Structures are given as C-alpha cells and as structure tokens.
Amino acid sequence: MLKLKDNCKWDLVCPTSMGVRITPAGRLPVHTSRLFEMQATSAESNVLNVSSSLGLNTKVLTAFVKDSPIASFIKAELRFRNISYEGPEVSQGGAWGYRHQFNIADSGFGSRGPRVWNDRSGEVGRTLKAADFDLDRLFVTEGVRILHLSGLVCALSHETSTFCLEVAKAAKASGTLISFDLNYRASFWKGREEELSSIFSQIAGISDILIGNEEDFQLALGLKGPEAGGKALGQKTAQFKDMIGEVKKRYPNASVYATTLREVVSANEHNWGALLLSGDSWYEESPRPIQVMDRIGGGDGFVGGLLYAILAGKEEEDWIKMGWATGVLATTVLTDYCTPADEEQIWSVYQGNARVKR
Image (cartoon, rainbow, N blue to C red; front, side, top):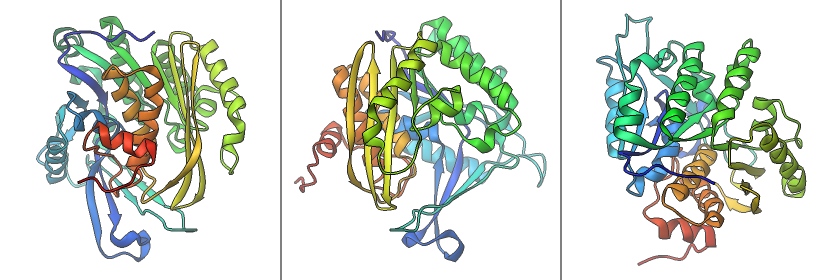
C-alpha cells in the first residue's frame, strides 16, 4: 500500500540531464532535412510534464553549462512547462569542454521507422553528484511526495550512478516514495554491466514503484521474461504477469509494478497496452490500436500519467487507465512529452472519444 507524505512543497522530483532534441520538419528523415525544430528534452522531465501541466509542483535536479545559450533555452522551456529546476552551473571549460546533450530524431512514417541519434559527448549531466544539492533541505525541510528515478540517468556515468543511489537513500530515509523506471539502454551498459547491475538492484530494492517496458525488467534486473518485439505481445499476458511476479519476489519492498506493452504495426500505427500489479490486484489494458504522430516519449507519458494518478489520489483501477491515455496523448504530438489540457482530455483519449469539444 502506497502512503504519500503530507505537507510537502514538492509533489514530484527527479534527477535528470537536460538537453535538446532537434526534429526535422515535415516528418522527413534527418539525413535529407534542411529545417529542424528544437525543444528542451529529457526522459525524466517528460514524466514530470503530465503533473506540471495539471497543477502539481514538480522539480528537476540537473546541471547547466554556465553562460550557455542552450542552457538559457532549456531553463526558459522548463519555466514555460511549469517545471522548477535546481542544479550547479558548470563552466564550459573551453570549446572542447562541457555541453548539453543533443538528441537528433525523426518521427518516421509508414514502413520507415523513426531513427534516433544521441550525441552526448561532454554532457554536463554526467557530472551530477549528491554534493551539488542540499538533500536534507529538499527531502526533510521542504518535503517530496515522490522521487522519480530513471535508468537512463543512473547509467549515464559512474558519478550519476552513485548520485542516483545516494538521492534514493536520502529520499527513503525521509519517507518519500521512490519510483524507478528501469529504462535500459544497451549502449550505456556496455563495459559496466557488473557495476550497473549492482546499482540498479540496490535502487530497485528500496523503490516503492517499479516500472519497465517489454524488456526492461529482463535486461536491467537479469530476469527471465517473454521475448520482446513481434506482433503478439497481447497473447503473452500470462508470461508478463509471471515475470512481474518474479520481480515482486526479488524486490518485495515495492507495492506497485507496471510494464507497457507495445506492438508496432507501422510508424503510424501501434497496438498499445499495459499491465499493473498493486499489492495482489492486477489491472490490465490489452493492446489496442492507436494512431501515432511521433512515438518518442510514449513510455514517459505512461509513467507521467501513472504517477499523476497516484499523486492525485485516484482509485487504483484508474492508475493504469490514466497512464495508458497519457502515453497515447504523447504520441499524438511532435514533442516527446504530452501536455494534457485537463483531466477530461485524458479520459476522452482513454474512451476513444475524438469528437470536437466546443
């Protein structure tokens, strides 16, 4: 049973490494494009965007390059999205020094799948450490209801791995709930498998909410599960439930476990579903067809809606429904985060009601 703290300044806080995403206009491939749109991005700030859009108090813990125009752009976008920020200003150190990451991605179309190119050399977020923040002020004096951690930040560098573990321990000691989205990336783990397995296992061991996609639990926690991919995930529900049951046995501190289910028909049509276990109660959204403008950020949207529903005090059965719908909502826009106008819009998406609202 989840028990949220009362009288907290912050509803949802997450460590992150902010950067920018540039996307070709007109859904063109990157290599043939001349015009690009730019947005501030990170998987973790994408998660916050649901709660920040609906009036909750959110904050990212991050690092900025001092006097950088890209850092100024990122801060302005976070303010626009009602997301507070805190973190050190790190000197660039010359032309070959620190910078914010670039995420270069197209949306794909039809049988041409999206392609993502991450340019993260010299990324300032890789320097994050606990000493950069007053964790006692954050978790004890101000108070945080949920700390959300992502496997992307945990695996970014040795420094961020240690940072995430120390932040998680500080949150746990203060009574803050911990959400952990495993977010496995093979390129981040290469050559660090033993170190990251230990870090991920320690954070999972003190988390209250554990989240993955079709393969995160297997790859990040070393568990056996159904094969990801293909067009029959909806027929493997029992296998996914068995996998989550094994996660629960290994990491019993958590009381909520969730996974998304995605079948790709084309770049513009997916079958989208989810599973959630809370206590001993299962909730299921079988994969159903959705139309996709840009798939990037759909998983973050799911997590964002799930955590918003928990923070807003919704019934357990609605947690997965809101997560499913905000995941869909994220795929209907070209940003990699969704900005729901209100809860009614989320429920209209869930119900399949696309009629005009006047």
